[in-house]
Each structure stands twice: as C-alpha cells, then as structure tokens.
Image (cartoon, rainbow, N blue to C red):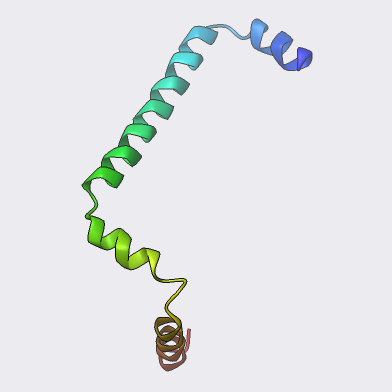
Length: 69
C-alpha cells in the first residue's frame, strides 16, 4: 500500500483524477438507481420466478434446440 501511495503522491494533478473518478462513480450510481426505480414491479416479479419455474426452463431449452444455439 505504501508503494501505491508514494506513486500517487508523485502524480501531478491528482486532484483532477479523484474528482473525475468520483463523478464517474456517482453518475453510474445514479443511472442504475434511475433504472431500478423506473422499471415496473411486474417485471421484477416475473424475473424473480425464473429460477423456480421448471416449465419455463424446459421450454427455453426446447426453443434453443429449435434455433440451434
């Protein structure tokens, strides 16, 4: 860790990189939050049952065989 800190202390304009990394992280976080809040609850209800529905898995496998994927 000391090696990384020593290297970062020598980098010029380190303030800009920290600000940019924070802005990128915060933008991505807001985009994901926006997507989650805009998605309808019915979509999450149907997707949450995918692992439990045995019939859907078999029909998906049959469709893949027909499409030869």
